[in-house]
Image (tube, rainbow, N blue to C red; front, side):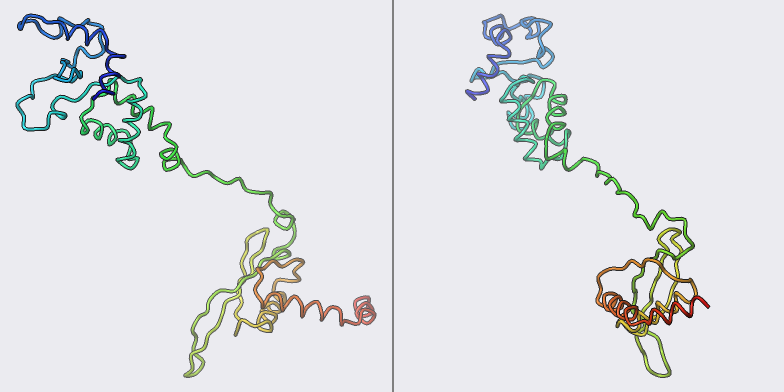
Length: 251
């Protein structure tokens, strides 16, 4: 109470002085306080501890005294800011209305409470993180193979999907799908693979190239079957008879 009284004496010294003077019982509170006072509409009075409280006509209700006659606090005060912060944390950062209700429930009446709470919540780092809109990541430059005016599937990507259960006679066997996609036009070509080994992928690649033509660049992830196929294709190219191939192509 001592802290609240000191805050009130600093902010409402004229009102407290006016209410402390002995007057006739018939004199109303509003006539003792200046009309320009920020608390004149609250019908304020001093309790037995000389703390300024909100008046009103609900004194006979069965509520607690702090709820019937809350303590008046100024808007701009460090104590007021601490009270708002405590109430905001107590409501788990639920926003302006919940924080205001918690302050009132605690037995305090802040001048321009809604504005003060709104200002505090707007600057709350936790609330700004929770309520901020997700940022849109800036996309990088498109790769070279996405921008070339080449025939479809000149630059392609490949991946496996599945497995799917198929029947061969009475047996159920697993089969996988192989998807080839053009990096420029996004066209799609589908093949099947009997397994996930390197030979199955090479067979699917041969079937794909026999239909779509030669692929200049093929993108994939780092799965073992793709790495093995790359190694085998490189070894096959190295074993070619270049002279015989050149003679054949020149004819």
